[in-house]
Image 1: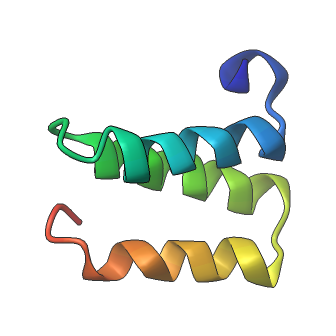
Image 2: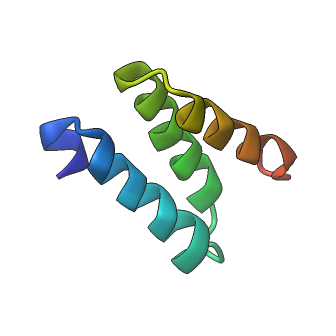
Length: 61
């Protein structure tokens, strides 16, 4: 749905699932980072920019 609709809501769901549920899967944080960058292009809000800062400390950066 995220790729079809390009809505911030679906990107947020993907980020939460990848970071909290599928965090043991290899490349999950990288994929979540891509969705976070998509959110910034859709809506450049403070919340979305702060979410990008979360990925700065991740070893997979």
